[in-house]
Image 1 (tube, helix red, strand yellow):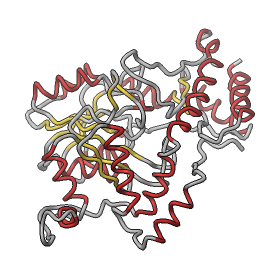
Image 2 (spheres, one colour):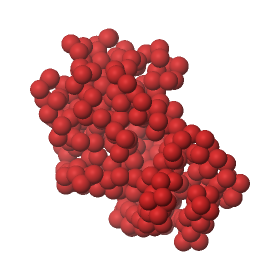
Image 3 (cartoon, one colour):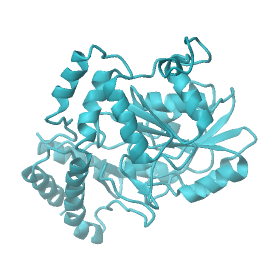
Image 4 (cartoon, one colour):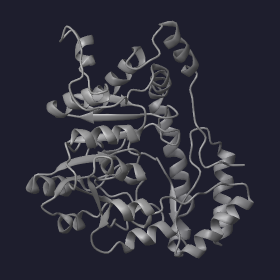
Length: 375
């Protein structure tokens, strides 16, 4: 069986986890959490980088930091994971869905302005498959209307927009280290910002609404409950796992891009024949090889493809069911304009296996079966 994803670990993973135990500190913000924080601060050039126990938790930290009031609106795509919307629903805000671009599956920046009302407070671009949204346009709109930009960079580790790391182009950025991501810790996430006020607020939110972090830095003589918050810290065991993978990030990215490029070249003729469409990377964006997908012409073709691949012991899942069509989406959110591209993409996109430990034999088997089906 060739699975869609297989989690990875490195030769150092168990060593670092054992070390965390030997230090007698396996709860949050121990040695490995601090190492991860510095890795991301330096790598992303941000003032604040805070590990969270999931990408969902990072989004919730951002939503609380945004100081939203009941009824406030937040613009985002419908073609995303439910956590993107749920983080704001928990703050009694209203996600407003706009359509996506047919080339990148990212939010259509030309649709954002018509969705803005007097209640709009933020825009949440989701960098689908690690490919950048058009952030210059989005940031320009946000500036003109006085809106926050909160990047859902869950899939965007080691990806860039015009040379700048994704997740650092708005007011706040949120990453995921779920086992399906390029670098992983089983579960895990990251909140980043370059705004001093948001940095301080997020730190308090993350520590159950206390100023505990200031206490440990010697900035206050005791810590106390100062604001709303929750427990968003991952254990240092999770951080140890993540740090062991971060040390190998360059090699991981190299392998993932190797697989992505093999797929891309292999299916060029199928695209010319109109059988499928391959991913499109705009000139302003980079490709972090988070995902390789194919777009079929209709739902029937995709359904038959998934079944045929499964019969060959290859798992090729589709992706999101659009949030605007989900029960909770209908209950808590609203749409603006036509979402026909979203609906079309959700019915025709399929993802191919792509993970660090894939062998050349497995890659070639996937390619051969795709070609067999399409021809």
